[in-house]
Length: 338
Ligand SMILES: [Zn+2]
Picture 1 (tube, protein in one colour):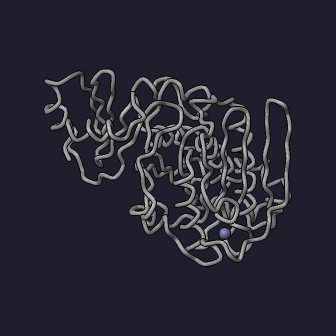
Picture 2 (cartoon, helix red, strand yellow):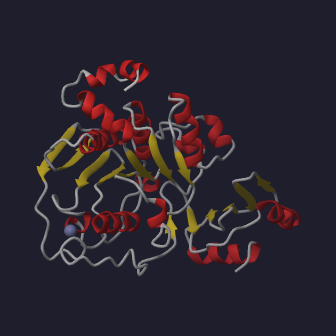
Picture 3 (cartoon, protein in one colour):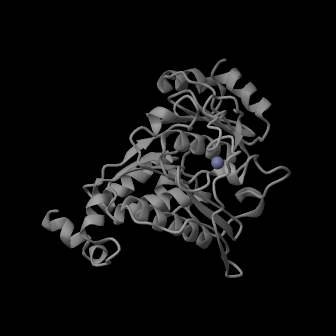
């Protein structure tokens, strides 16, 4: 290790559970963060400061003003320019450490692209906001033997659990089916920023232990940060009848579960089953007669009151102002094409 790094990480090296050998492992580590919102933006900053410079940042969304209350890396200017979160996060990480090598990936993680997007990751951190993507990550991680760390926060409540294939239960052992009924979301129940950093901190602490090759006690941690209640239980063993880690069936990876996802935190639908490059400059010209349109090289925003469409260069779109997938699809078909 060079003198710069010896000094930069001296307080962490002095912590005996990490030490010099652990620090060297962190400097070589390759981590993927899926979802760069409240949890993911915290993971990225904290891991980089700990010496994890190779971070892949996966996020489909762009920064909005109402994100700034809890999404730790972003600044007002990111929201004013509607910067894609992965790109904005990468820019800020380079300011924290000029030797950082972030890899921003502005996509929606799907069965079709997960093998490419997560290729080479030795650890995956969950910063997503939905069960479908977590099932996808879980199946990929179990299939390839990659540890991942589940985390979720809404209101003042949070939960986290590590999944280490071969040694802990998996996400499907715990949740064979997604929860039914109306679930609280950041939009309906709001979210307190402190719970997001607390859950993300637990995830980062386990990540450091996994990356340093340390043994750790696998626990499910739940907390309500408003009342100060914290509960930890030992993780149950893997279920032999679990479809994923027991029977090694991977239905989400096979693409048999796919639906438009209503995003957390707003009234919006994403059209993600489009995979065709869109020339945003031509599209801007095309849409100009129909309404206000703004574009940069990464995304185009088109206003059709009461809706607002953001179209990305890979053909994905986020339609704001509705939670009806049918309306979103209709607008997409109307203005971008089938
Ligand atoms: Zn399982």
